[in-house]
Amino acid sequence: MALALTDLSRDPWLLPEVDALIGANMPEFMSWESPGNWRWHGMYDRYPAHQLCLVDEGGRLVAAANGLPVRWDGTPASLPSGSDEVLVEAVDNGPPDRPDALCMLSVSVDAGHRAAGHAERLLTEARRLAAEQCPRGVVIPVRPTRKPRYPLIPIEEYAAWRRSDGRCFDPWLRTHLDLGARQLGIARRSLVIRQPVARWEGVLGHPLPGPGDYPLPGALVPLSVAEDGHGTYTEPNVWVHHAP
Ligand SMILES: CC(C)(COP(=O)(O)OP(=O)(O)OC[C@H]1O[C@@H](n2cnc3c(N)ncnc32)[C@H](O)[C@@H]1OP(=O)(O)O)[C@@H](O)C(=O)NCCC(=O)NCCS
Picture 1 (cartoon, rainbow, N blue to C red):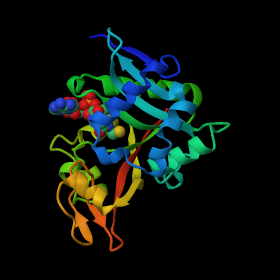
Picture 2 (cartoon, rainbow, N blue to C red):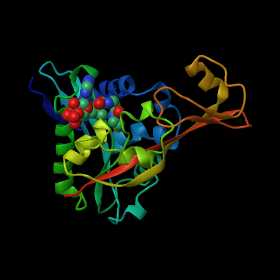
Picture 3 (tube, rainbow, N blue to C red):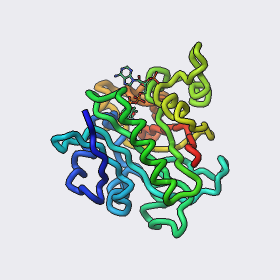
Picture 4 (tube, helix red, strand yellow):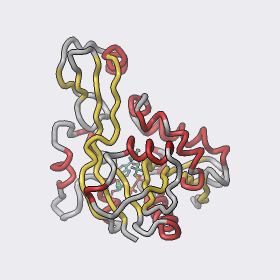
């Protein structure tokens, strides 16, 4: 099936579909209040041409990629702490005068259309956009798709896992590396969500009676419950760089 490429500057009516696609592909808590999530729609408003969409012949959304231009000096040490920080800076302070890199914060493919090259096409389009505007290419705080099955393994160890054929263990990180991207480091606090324990209990369907670390379905690391009655999910991501 041939899919057409568009974006929210050309087809703003796709906005609710983009939200619905991301929502269907992520655990519910991933869209709860965080400094970045508060600004997610601000990204659409300020950078509509960087919200890429693939639509089928009937105009229905099949895949989307969301990003924005950032300043970056090219060194791993100067990368932001992750998705939250990128959104705060780019939405509150507006487009940089001279963007260095395009930062893609989300790629989502409809569950019925996976492994068909759509994610790769969106990444290729992001690289093409960057080639026009951002001399240092594309940077991405990647959420490795199989990590929720291994929540106790430290993210740097997980990101270093390789299969017997030498390719990366995680399928989504593998797609990036196969396209020629390089792992730059860990975004240790990419997305931080702190909520009262009762809200987490609602998602889990069972009580969290005391402080400690708890398994959380769909999460990359355990949920940490503190004495103050709040649970904090601190999502780590893996920075990758698609050089120009
Ligand atoms: C991450 C995502 C965009 C990748 O899209 P995709 O179409 O699966 O991407 P790819 O075709 O590159 O697939 C990556 C690998 O997963 C495999 N894969 C994808 N879907 C699969 C499925 N349903 N069953 C088995 N394997 C699958 C592919 O075969 C490929 O493996 P390979 O490198 O050995 O060929 C998609 O899985 C998704 O939307 N996930 C939910 C949202 C998310 O986690 N996004 C990333 C963080 S923002």
